[in-house]
Length: 232
Image 1 (cartoon, rainbow, N blue to C red):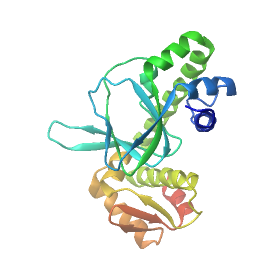
Image 2: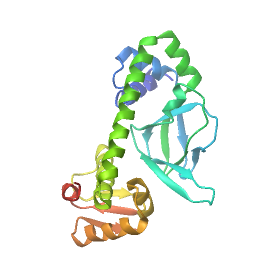
Image 3: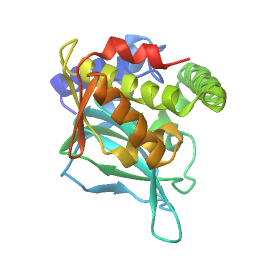
């Protein structure tokens, strides 16, 4: 990357939880091995079972991670937007991909090859220590989230997923109210760990309460603060 691109990449990396503990000089070192990548709408970035060893940080656009069943069904695991990282374990090893990541719209990203990152970690062991601590924190947070979800009702889980998507949209410039979220009912249900029917019934409750309005593949959250009333 050129100096201007490196500066922009460093600023983006500083917002990613995995890299937030790194010093500016370390962020610049990571940015210098990053490569700009662009993906079209509905393009597969990598597939479950692939052996690719690159991680990605989203600069603009949206993608999702899915797991595929042998019967052809796909279950959404996560949605990614600007500032999100995916495939990050490729920084440490070249194991096969555990999920498929596909774009939802045009995506600009920066890619960091695992071999480049591992060479950087060998030259600067302090970076490795900080990354391991950050990844450990992410794992604890994920475990805590799963534990909370196991005790939550479907309403709580769906409202929580909507709240997270609203926060992502706000980070991209959305207003405090009438926030448009592009997602299907099926994806919401899968992210919330519920059946589509249960999620649909609760979304209908929110719609009758004028909290949301549903459209085809999109939901407008009129009153995001009201979602907290359904999380317990």
